[in-house]
Image (cartoon, rainbow, N blue to C red; front, side, top):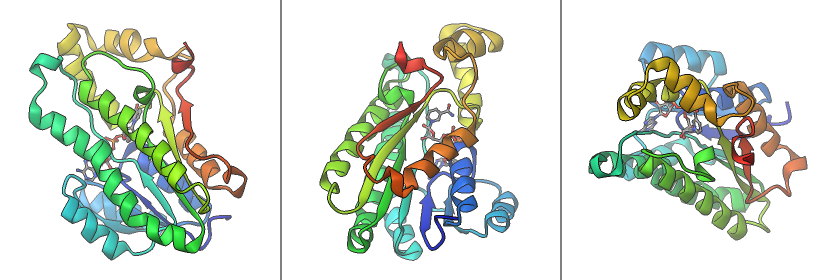
Length: 251
Ligand code: NAD
């Protein structure tokens, strides 16, 4: 329970990867604050399971982020995980989707980070973990906003790692390949439409085509990596972009 006494905010933790990270941090003793959307009953059950606070701030609203950070108070571990995707050729890409993806995947982490850093610097310890993506290192067609946001968060992470290098605060990206979560499930119909493929073809020939292991990454594998980055032994790991992608970006 090496994270006893530490407070962790995990954005987008009502589902998928964020929930797995929240569970993994809780298992090591962290006091977790959940964030995200979802069914109130299911969120209440998660709060019970993890003995967690919940803040449902819409991270597309900088004012709501400020209110959340003020209400939550000092945070030792910040996991910027909430994210969204839209799949469309660039000439048809809706401008509102572009703005939302950049807003959630890139601008929201800027706001949470700038508001969390003063306490971390003051206490001399902190961990900032940004869920980026294999798409922070490479691109796929029809995901212009997502690829731009994820390349952006990788650059942002390196910058704050350098700014915080002597403060005891580390900042790293975790970059999964395809993890079987609702986000992936949700983009299958759009990819079918954009590429004219069946569901099976999208899964086998588009999604897992990228991953030499031919296996989806499991959310709890990402949770375990986040826990490692919180360890004292990871104190010199900063500004890194950790791939967990079945070998995708090795090609
Ligand atoms: P998910 O759809 O299962 O979960 C997304 C979470 O974000 C949910 O909790 C949702 O409620 C929350 N959320 C959405 N909009 C929000 C908003 N405006 N304000 C606050 N919370 C909001 O997705 P996931 O697959 O678990 O993805 C989590 C992160 O991992 C994202 O940043 C995603 O880009 C990244 N990622 C996912 C995969 C994958 O294969 N699933 C791969 C690489 C990177």
